[in-house]
Length: 453
Ligand SMILES: [Zn+2]
Image (cartoon, rainbow, N blue to C red):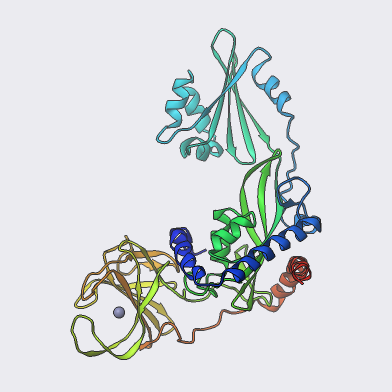
């Protein structure tokens, strides 16, 4: 799944949007704020937003499709405590700090190195004990005389391990925890930035980035977004024993950009690969990214003749220039193989990727390269270098060329191969799974239309 790091643009997007919106008449903006408020209130009243307080709703249809069914019911929390540590023990929780190792945490609680070794012999524990992250928790139980009787940690978000110590040795109990996915819905109207609109609709920044990633092939969020654009999203979040653990994934969404509606439906194909598809079953992922560098503006277009800013004479500009701060990551526009990485006159530090099927792309003026070398395969979206102004450049920008059979083409207008739709057998399954999602999106949309009249 290619990552398009929209987070780095947030401040930029907000900034440029504030500027654009400032030129709009006041009454227009006010009306849309009101509309967005009315819409959200109407949706809430219609019962689509859960009575739990948060705008989460447990949807029977969606749940069938995504809820994790755990075969083992969890022990009640207090029962676990007594089983593990004895009634006279008190649990103490230690939260991992940045830079701490599990060895140091265990030593600090009086756990011997041998115990840690024996826990690591169970390879299922390796991830939880070797790659620990700040904020994770370990619990320790000490008897009244101070000696350690038990410890507890999360092997993963669904599995808790309790280790008890007694005269006969070390015992490990593994318990499944009750993890469920809940479906949430959000609708927003863009007034200033996508982040602001989505935050108002109850989505956090991580989910906004997922939304932008899903539609990033069709909508250039740095340049195409307009006030009045709207989105309707069904997503899920992960809950454990009544507490929200984290946001999940976008399940289905509409995005209306400049009056045109795009749809995205998450679907796992027969091989288990999960991607977003349009309602008619075509992958949203295209062979090439529209823009190989994020949060940017076009500073010079493809032209057969232009006055060269440094050479001072007429010369064809055989690519597109994207102005961006030095150090901004440059992404491979498509899957391919690096066929050149080095210095070329004019281009400065340049990378050329051969994508097969007649296509190649070139990235110039980079400040430095990423670690990928000549001959290596790169995936779409992978960072291959960083924006700079090496070679003939008056400011930091990416010079991007797109070639078909060696002939320079305008990357902004060249016709690209359409992704293949799902095969007929898969398509039937896709339609069956996506129908309830689309029906729900339509229902949410029609409620908004009704309330806006
Ligand atoms: Zn250029």
